[in-house]
Length: 120
Image (cartoon, rainbow, N blue to C red):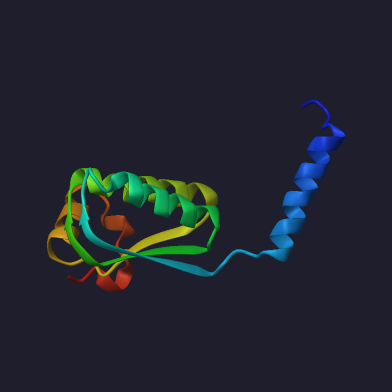
């Protein structure tokens, strides 16, 4: 591994210092609502990526007000779950009911459903 330049050492030191002053949040809750489909996937993805940039310990996505979820609309949830796992953030989806729960199970996103919601 080549030695770090002074600029690289400064950048790495600055990041470490900033993390000390701005510790990770314990819990960040995102509330989604409406129809989550192909036409809203980009906006949903943008919101979830912004939440992950804050590096919370737990990212919770409340879908209690989601009226419909399609496979295209679920893609941002899948990508957020993968991104969260990669950075050490616990990712969970809460209050999934009816059609939303069925689609998540069908797509293999059941592991993201919160424990308290798994009985339904």
